[in-house]
Image (cartoon, rainbow, N blue to C red; front, side):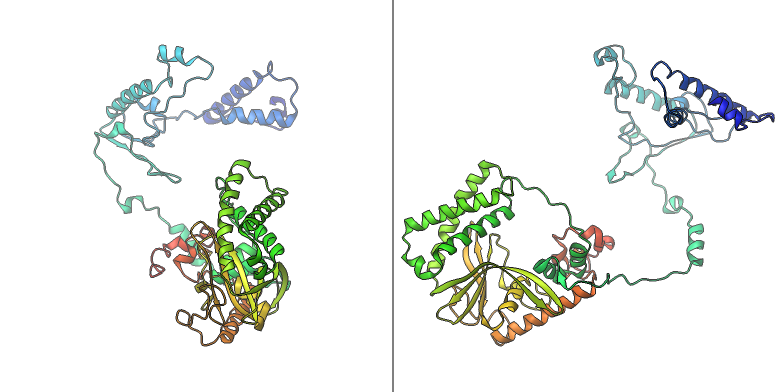
Length: 496
Ligand code: SF4
């Protein structure tokens, strides 16, 4: 290394000044330390050798001696204690730093270190040392400041408990304000271009990836729709213990599909005795489980419990089905394509029944959660446009839409229909929902869907949550859209 530097002309022939000379001496010491690695390593390639030498120099403390008395000296706490100064400022005196945490030497047994009261060997020894040093610092100058940072990243810090006896002062805002003049001058002279980033690039394909969920997210908030489906900016899923709601829902869907593939209509359901129905439910759940296990690993114990619970839910559900006016099941888990505006959307409809009495089709979407209600289909920017898309697919043949809610507390249909009593508790309900006729409602839905399709296609990404704070509450994207940067969620949206 020395030869290489000499050949490249360093440090040169001219006489060195004091600082340069001290630096050269320190450099030679570093080279000497580096050469002590000889017994430990065999042959080093040049890059590794430079890397090691770099590490050695980085770990070497060096400050050239000042020719005279320096007005300000920066030093460690240990060096500072015991001298006398005009003024002293001790920094970093927070509770996590002072007294220092013990850090016993890993190569010496801790018992021996504590027995001999070695530095960093125990909390008691560090406390004693910090108390002694603090009192020495207090005697080192007439004018002394101890300060501490208030935060380290997200963690709030407090002053060291050893400083409790001292007078606490808070610097005025003026004292801690950093002059911004350079930045302000720079900003004042720079031209500022304002960019409207409410729109991303327009969709180039008419085949919509994301299907009904893109409509749902776009309707809730254009930014959410754009970020989740165009930027793929989803948050990591939170693992849940036991069977997740998603797996439970899948098992229910599979089992109901198998049950109705066998029964086909309400007549066959009425002809099936309780015992046979229970066996059919059992068989369907078993087959559904095998299908699920082909692509999911599920712990056997919670799965067994879950199947027992689902069996009870399905028994209740089939009682409700038996109370319906006559019907036939037309389709189960039907995949289809729908054109909305200029977009082609892929859909999967859980079930379509034909009502014998009302001469029309009923759309049914199973839900194991309790949050789904027909109010979510009404008004501008509907919360759940999925059923509206299904209705748009069936057009005038649809006479009713309903969620089939199957869970621990409920086994019921929740929906809207052209006529009363199409399903238990599902009818016209003009009282609660403001629409003049079924046909007009279907038209309104088509209009809403076309508007959403247009937005999606144009790349609309405005940060306008449809129901303000409520829409944002469980959205995983608040860090990305930064709606809460100015506390907007707590103020502007409070009326929600
Ligand atoms: S947090 Fe609110 S504003 Fe931000 S993307 Fe989600 S819904 Fe939109």
